[in-house]
Image (cartoon, rainbow, N blue to C red; front, side, top):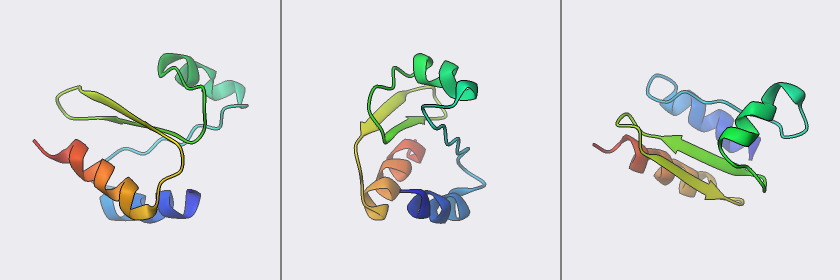
Length: 74
């Protein structure tokens, strides 16, 4: 998934803030708890109007791209 995330970060970099959190890392424990992460990969999109959407499990680059675009749509 990292290659797809890197590519999409380059494409959406000015519109979307990407945070990659590895579950076993102590530094990301608060994110894991805050977003109730139980399975990886776990994607969270918080739209500009504060709506939170989650997707769990592997996705193709195009599926992840559509997920991002849906979050950017006003």
